[in-house]
Amino acid sequence: MHRIAELLRRWSAGTRRALNGPRQALPGEVQQLQGLVKEMQQLPVVPCLRNARDGMAEGMERYTAALLSHLHGSASDDEIARGIRAAQTTIETNVVGMLVCRPDLVVVAAAGVKATSGV
Figure (cartoon, rainbow, N blue to C red):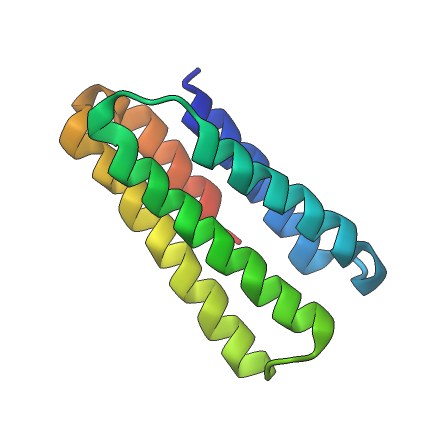
């Protein structure tokens, strides 16, 4: 399985835990998600996938920022929800963007969209 799909599956599982778990577990979940952002940023890819990889990492960073806002109480629930939705859209757009470079990654793209859309 492609490393991007595996990373997105772990991301999806982590975001589900962060959103559905107890608030006291959120700092640990956010820390794990931040680690996945770093993994995505450092993931070696062919040159034509760099923009998609970087865009996915950007969306992931925005998602963790929204979770941190929730944790610190620095944003309203509506602002946090909007931030999470915008981050998900960024991730999904870039997952689909992988296909411009590598049409053979359609299974990876489908897994990535599925992994992010149910959160």
